Each structure stands twice: as C-alpha cells, then as structure tokens.
Amino acid sequence: MEDEDDFDEIMNEFEKQFEEGGEEEDHAGEEEEEGPAGKESPDREQEGEGQKGEEDPFEDLDELSKMAGVKPKSAAIVSGLDKVALCSMCALCEVPAECFKTERGSFAVLDVSKRDPEEDTASLTGLFKGLEVVLILNRDQKLSAKVYRDGKEGKKIAPPLVLYWAPKLESYLVGIEGLKELKEGEACISSSSITKEEALSLLKLAFKS
Image (tube, rainbow, N blue to C red):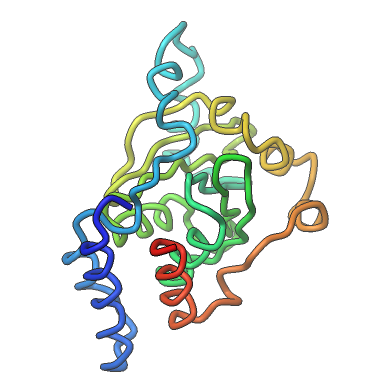
C-alpha cells in the first residue's frame, strides 16, 4: 500500500454506500486512484522473461476458442495479496471465489459454470484501481494467462511462470485434482462466507497492519 490516505478514501466510499443502504459500488471505483493494490502480483518482476524466447505457434488458439464460444473449463486469479485481502475484495465485488494461500500471495478459484471469469476479473480490477492480478484459465485443454489492471486485459504471461509458486493450482486447472481435493489439502476462504461489512473491516486490518 503506497498511500494510506488513498486507501482511507476508498474505504470511506464503501462505508458511505452501506450507510445509505446502497448495494452498488458504481462511484467507489471513480474515487479510487491507487486502491489497496500497492502489492505487486507474484510474477510482475518476471513478466519480461515471460515475453522473451521463441513464440508459441499455438498462442492464438485460446482466442480462437473464445471466439468460437468455448467456455473455460477452470479459471483462477493469482495475486500478490494475502488470501484474506483477495477474498474480501472478491466479496465486495460479488465475485464468487474460493481463496487459497501461496508462498508469494494467494489465488482465487473462480466459478466458471455460470459466470465469465474474464468479466469477473475485469470487474475486480476495475473497482480496485491499481490492483494487478493474473487471470489463468483452461480453455479447450490449453492454459493461458493474462495480466489484468484497471479493468482491462493486458499482457500475456507464460503459465509456468504464474504456476511456479502454486503447484496445487496447476493440478486443479489441468483436471488432476478437483476443487474438493484442493480444499482438503489447503485451507481456504470463500467469498460467499464474508459479508460486505466484514470484508471492509478485514481490508482495513490487512492494509493498516
């Protein structure tokens, strides 16, 4: 967190909406400049490395599959934030997610059965200005990873760079383990188990401790 005053402003905006009984965060995103996103994504320093080397001749298959209407089989957001902060943000954005800890942050397994993971990721980073995450998904049996910031899709990253610190996530994404098995081996927090009021309090604790 680079600017505590900016974070206070963000929290005050959310709290105003709760006091007024509002359910939408339309104006919260407009007031946020940096947001509680001062922490880098786990692989930000390695993005350049992911862009180097030989080009993948199949790198556009994901885009073609997307255009053809192929839904992702699985998806997750990877972040440098701790799992409590990431889960709290998902709760505030009403993004269903199961959040797990990694050696360098956390990841949130997204619901792909009824929701669009790309829209959810754009919504999350659009509300929390300055937050940078990586969305990694399995579409048509091919893993792809992209950076998201300020609600926009950014650079592609080689999936192995993202999954290096989260081997369990890789097992889930490729279908070796299901979500049930993932939960059995790792403690997780569900965004559906946190109210928005609780999420605000948790974020304050996370970024002011």
